[in-house]
Length: 292
Length: 330
Image (tube, rainbow over all chains, first blue to last red; front, top):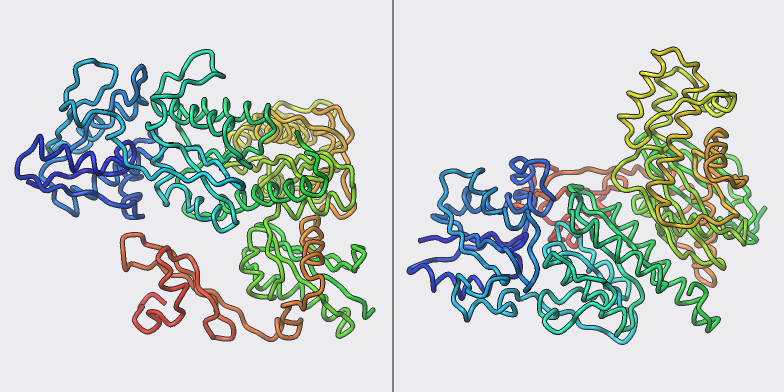
């Protein structure tokens, strides 16, 4: 049986988890991943996604359509990610994405197990459910100096189509991009700034990592990659911006959407890196911070 | 005039600006032309005008390009430095007004705010997806009301009772304007109402959460509109300075940066005659080799392929001969 797994949106970075778990549930299964986002998938997604959805969810629909049309999968494996950290919930679009697919593609069979870390009794086997086993994103290396913190949901950071190669741009300007550690970090860190921890899994993850890096490492600036139409981002971005203004860190927010050309993003990021370089030079000359 | 000169080129969506500065930063010549969607031709024309005027007396020591067409322009002229327009605008503003704190820059397609402290950019923002409140929108509305864009400010400033227009979105603003027009409001009130709406939109979108300290510089093509200046002053309650070379500030900035960059180096500038003589061409096609469907652009100089870009896998941009015979799309 061909089991299709779209590895974008909330399922990005979960490949090893799927490889481990799917044979436990389905015998004789052949797993087919949709792979990297291509323009073809984006075209499918934009055609079939309703306008309410954020762009990563639209791209996800593109991945699903690609699996159905081009890979002829028998069944789609779409776990319902209700909660990825104890005490939190995922974004409603992530929780509802199996239903969106179900109504869009009536003929396809779906397997929708539940992953819910709020519950004591878990639906899937105990071993595969520990949250450090869910995601396999590479951890970013933190350099001594010239670090730029790039904050975004994992599916934006690791999708070159969405972020237009921003990590590469930062690297080629001589800076080291660092990004959140995706649910590996939160078991031991509790935010001290916020009166109350975030309600959403991804927001808690991103904010806590941000707070930790600002307090414990040398970073030169923060870039927030916001997806158009994301409710979590609109909250989180504002909180992070306020904190950056308070501590005097250069902050840049870039909104990614359906744009094809990357010129707009490149211009902003280039100007931002110029600004940081300018500051660094003047700091070296004066030995006194001119902005803080 | 055989002294050392520097050339700054700013290719924007609406205008193409070329300036010549000397080594003290004094502006010798400035040219402002409409891009009209043909950046290469207009750039060649602008450089041709300079060459006709000065001939061989021009001794160019450095060239810089900026604006959204900066990469294309750098291939045409052989630029020493290619920089984004934010840095270029900040550079020239600091050069003319050293204690500047805020720059309001409104161009054809995008608007920017740049905050400066102690001659260093500390923060900036650019409009996101919407182009409401930029030059091209004002252009369109002036055209619709049959008013030459140069007269826009003059007429609008006469207004006594500006009407309220929603400036959030260009489409809504237009329908709001038509409504007010049909109700019989005089033209100047509608025009100044529009200016106020656009200034309000700018402040709400770009200056959100930022403190605008004076001195404030207003530059870019829209700064020619005295009513826009007045609208900003009314909303902010502070005097706003429009610098002398407001419409070519980006080009001056990049010329200054080129001057810094070429210190002790030989320029890559191709020479006016070369640029004039060459025939530059671009061709685009959609590559269908994989499902990425990249839009590849090929750049030709006198029929010879010089550069290619736009492909994700870089098989075209790294190897110029790739697929040249095979591809039917070319």
